Length: 374
Image 1 (spheres, one colour):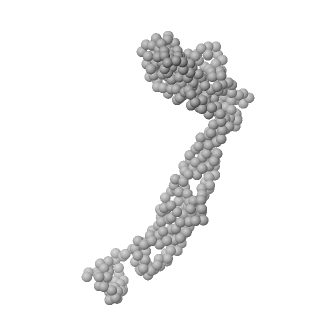
Image 2 (cartoon, helix red, strand yellow):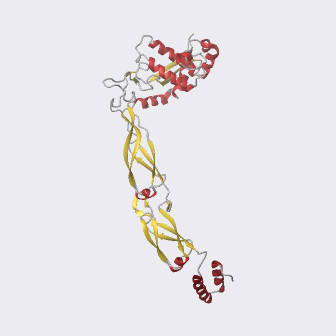
Image 3 (cartoon, helix red, strand yellow):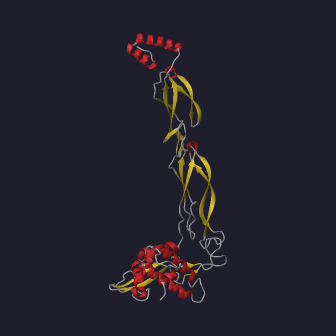
């Protein structure tokens, strides 16, 4: 008796995926429409018989233990109590069979198919996200083969009708059970539900009708994007099969951090340190913003950890670049740890005059700040 494992060219411990892969390869190799050698059709039937037995776990277990005697006679003719039979084989093989779902799958496979959408992750600099830019990127995606123009067949040839399913893309099997006769429908294993096979495939695309190429695209990044912003580029995904529309390209933005400026929505935040004299007397200092260096006025009497605002120096609102947020500046006041004698004399004189006008507790606070014993 023939060894079904040997027929498929797999080991006895082969898993379901290995069996499926081996069957597909051999079925295409020996299909009568492709292989015209004498005996190819018999070999094709032998391969189908072997796979039908080994693809079903229960049937395979009986075969492993008892050989062909354990599977109720010839493979492909299930026992009366076997509710699965040929249909279970195709359910395992093609993930579903019969009814409306199979018909819908066949229609989808045979007709035009929407191309897959693609994702591209793009890192951009902090300021480029603020004001926008144009970037050139390269993406790998599927395009229609220029040689066969998407047919998958060698130039001058074309697909032929699959003889296994008669061009329907489906195979049907009537099974007798104690509960009556059942008709089970599955996708054709030879043409994969297409209804046609390519005997002489295009050498350029291997019969797929599409090729992967790297394409250059110029992406317009609008002002105000942030990490997580998703840009859609219509029609730049994978090309659709059988004349179907191409998918879209989605560009996901990730913005690099800046060492000085922080962002929260459309507002920018930064810090600046000033001396206690600048805080008391007031001053004008240069600070860095997204627009470059600008002058910031420090009002006299500015308190530590107070916030000053620069209006319209923040991030443009996405979709409305005229509207911008603000730049918020946190003011840190630096107190000296050491002072000169001249400075001390001046400050003590100032503290004395201030003390005369206010309570002595303020003078005590001053002495604590600058290290003078009370």
